[in-house]
Image (cartoon, rainbow, N blue to C red):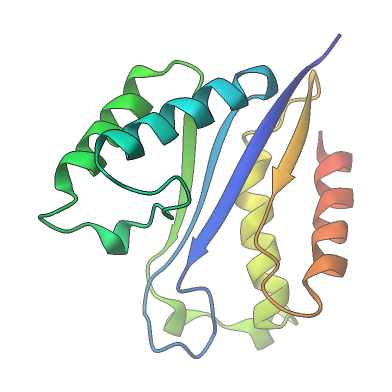
Length: 153
């Protein structure tokens, strides 16, 4: 039986005209059977640092008051052999030339997600990939990304 992995993806500064030079896509993944254990441990870390269970972990929220929480979270991540990370950094979105490649910024965005994910995927495993739906067309494009990723394995 093939192992199943949950893959959680997020992005930062992905909009074409957000006046941000750098874009980052990231993916954290773990075996499906370890998801609950990891979630419970992260909630325990939050509780230890007087944070509510629903506190959203965002690096923009790092502050002197929360530094101990984030350091413990980083230690947990690197100490846990079941947690993995891959990131993709676009250094300068202003250099993109969509017209040369006959694409929209949106098309390019999903190509970058494919680039992020393709080295994670293995034909011997199954994946549950969770992406943010970024707009009203997102569900259709995520379905296309699914089809392309599936055929690439």
